[in-house]
Length: 183
Image 1 (cartoon, rainbow, N blue to C red):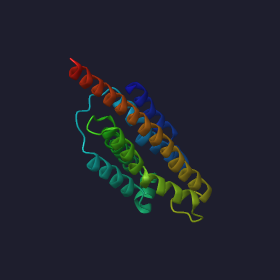
Image 2 (image 1 turned 90 degrees about the vertical axis):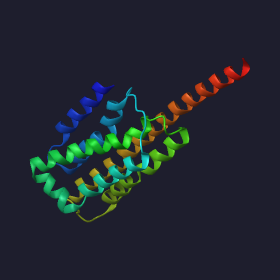
Image 3 (image 1 turned 30 degrees about the vertical axis):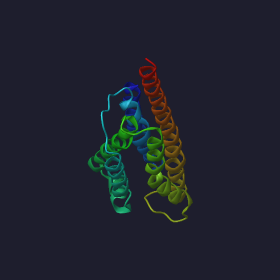
């Protein structure tokens, strides 16, 4: 799975292109697709969910301030920093979903709450008739749809998967406890 994560990172570099929607697709790959694949099978001992979520939200908010975002679109070094920080924010975002610290319900709540800023920003960009970033309104609306629907889909599936894995672990633990009590 980590190899697929590296593939998602490489795909993000390729799809960036010159359009805003291509740029946002790269962001979705770096935040929502590559990190869970890179973390698959990793032994995550502990995580601080609120700290991880706050870091993700901060990075997301910082890079989507219009002057900062537009400058990153025209500066290769700043654009590289933006993409690296999105990958780090994505790893932070997904880390708690791989940690045994959160149970099934905790993972589900975490995933649902974590996706709110991306959803809100994506929905706003998709629905606003005003140009916020460089490009065209139509391209901005497509970019918003990618953020809104693409990111939500990945986070929902990933959150449910993490919840299922936690439920299975909890079931195995309960069966082990029941076996010890029966002896």
